[in-house]
Length: 452
Image (cartoon, rainbow, N blue to C red; front, side):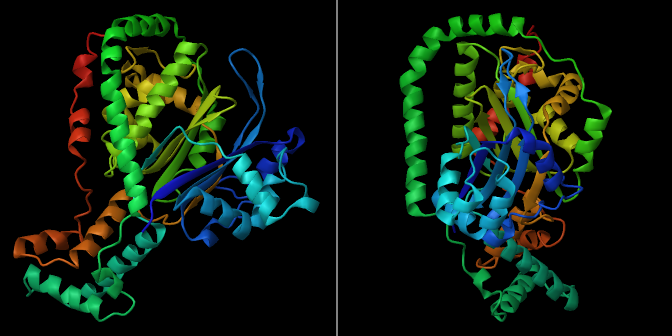
């Protein structure tokens, strides 16, 4: 098994190629001739991928921001190997799509080595990355889906009403053992490499040590920080405009094609050193929390997100957020409002036009109407969107992993009965960690009640 990573490639589009590239790529609902040019499925280890066109814009000082093309992938393994695989396996598709970009090699000079060099040069490192559960590869997810389907077919063909739960469990284990294409499931999945685990452990403890060292400075400077924060918040000007009905309809047309959906939103970071530093600090905290606190299938109470990332653009003047999640956009927004408003406010309140916050965590998206009006004004089309398992939710994936794990265990009647529920209506995620539960238990509604 391997860990999961992300790759973001961004380059400027030639001005005269923007509209033709959009037409060639099409949309998720209405693919164009180049929609499937990059064969993500051929790589074998890509969970999600997308191509995004960012239109020309202006920053808050009126300076032009050129149109950009972005390639985003979530995959198993290391970035270096992934870049090499894209440059080789997907070279023709990469040429067809990225030839519209300013810095892509000329056709006469293109080669796997030049493509790889180009990808490395135009890679933009995400500021924060969320992975629903590290260690679950594309191969594991697909094989465990097949395992569940085969077990279900076996049970449908063999009546079990007269057997006890433990007897049914033993019968299923025997069935799997007798199938040469399924007997791999009787062995536990191997976790990420020891080197990766050590690196994560070092990162975790280094972060804690740094927090302890900086705690006295933070406490001493907290009153000044809060005063400066409120000074900026009171001068924020929320964007009360609304996206056109045509634009909203176009976004909705790309939704609910699979059991999960995608969103990408981009915003200009508010001017000034204070907002830049605050954005950087909150994103570092977000990345740390995603790696070491919210790393068991939940992100601040939300259990529907497969992958998410926060990526800077245009010399940190803009920031975009990309997410792959289960369910509808409406339920996604409601989940953030109800369960994670404080976290979303802390990051996105540094973006221009965001609903006004109070002491960073309060207000903001708790104004439901303002938030739902604001989001479409910052939303961007994913022209191409790929999923390796379009019919699986985060709960399905976790459930299938638990079914597989249960095959290698000796169970009591009660344990077997509980395990068998996973083959019926028992889809559920494991509990989040203690610190995550503690943070999620904070009653921000009470804390923020008198904030103004």
